[in-house]
Length: 269
Image 1 (cartoon, rainbow, N blue to C red):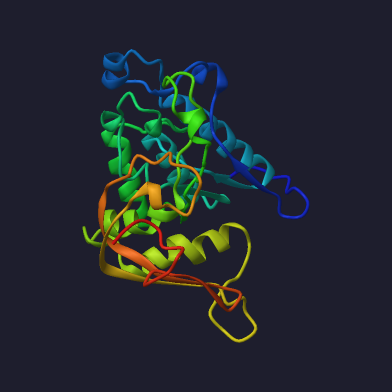
Image 2 (image 1 turned 135 degrees about the horizontal axis):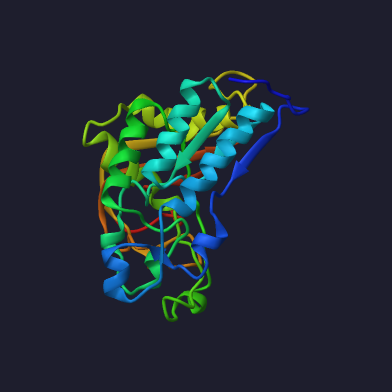
């Protein structure tokens, strides 16, 4: 592995991997769909070249490198290679990146996010990484925006979509119901995995923070963004029917959300 110079304090570097020279002016992933829509495309290499560089720097310094919202197949292969070498490299993926692809993009700013929705082969690679353990966590990259900022031309709109209320449902739909991963793996990806990345130990035990989500894999519901708990409306999943839902959320021992009869209900059942 070569010589390392460990940085003090077990430094954790969380990176949005993007080569700005390759990404400059781009608003979606480069490909057939970007050409058809007349939108400037960002190559997958804009992400993966940064991951390649920083994996090598992690090896050199001994730092812990975490790749946020990884979206490209090449990036995932670099993380897998780093793990095989025993490097402190981890990554997360988002529900929208393992569900949608660039072919789903419409001239609608609800589909504008960064990293952009990727190619079909990238999504398949992410699904594989979620199943085989290469991916450490699922994160939403939740980015609400005032409706007036999103209701403009695609080029002018800011990047980002809502993610909290649909994250679990998308994971259950894409991973559990397809038998790609087990329920315990879902718990790992949403809870213990992120805690490990941050160097935090979390468990259900006396004296631990009582933060718990109770969920059903069978509850049918339809996401209605107009009834969202968020003041923003920028979600490409508006109107999507799901099978699987969060039923209750407990924070510090107090129930802060209950699906049945709650005024804070997310979407409509």
